[in-house]
Image (cartoon, rainbow, N blue to C red; front, side, top):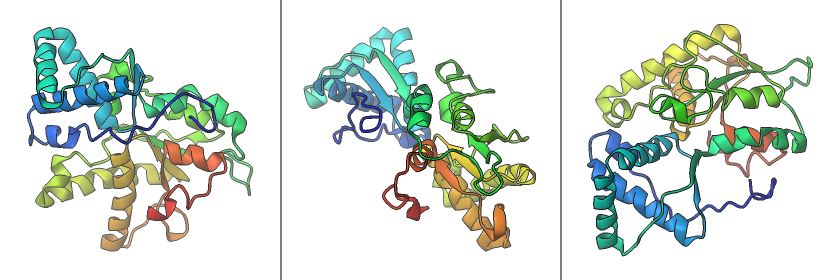
Length: 271
């Protein structure tokens, strides 16, 4: 956004976790989460900004839940302001706009396409690559009206596939959860549920021969990648070409590859 497209955006090192995993797992109360979010808004103001971007879809859902709570229960906002002031001495203004980072990539998808060195085209056949989009549940399913396209037909990743030359794969479990689910994974005894969710998706998409999966949630990207490795170890089964798994990329990684970034610099060796 900043270096390629010249947008005024900062990645503030003082920002912290939104506490979403702890909140959704029932470990901390919502008041704690709201106070942490209030601090993030204060940091935004201190940096001289009034629009907020988050890269985690759980954070996206958390921030919207906080803002909706304050809108309907202003006395709760007043309480949190007092708690933040007492804890940190800070005050804050509510953002004018709050979006997920994939919304920005979607908004400027044409600008990225113009600057891209390559497109989602098979260099041997000349045909579009078959791409599966996986939209994080906390992006589209908690507050569907806040995401691009809602819950059933989100466009935030599908629009990238279309604009960058690929072919969308529609398959039965397209909107199924990746399997992370927090409580399924945080308790070791429950991880079979997490794995089973992901396996259901892989089995459903395999007949359509996807070349890659793109996701807009860090957790989804991780689990769709990790569980393929686990299934390969457990069952000696792979879902991609030539005995490999299906590559799983975040929308940022995919944009970086098309723009000619070095895969090593982007950390793809950690997949």
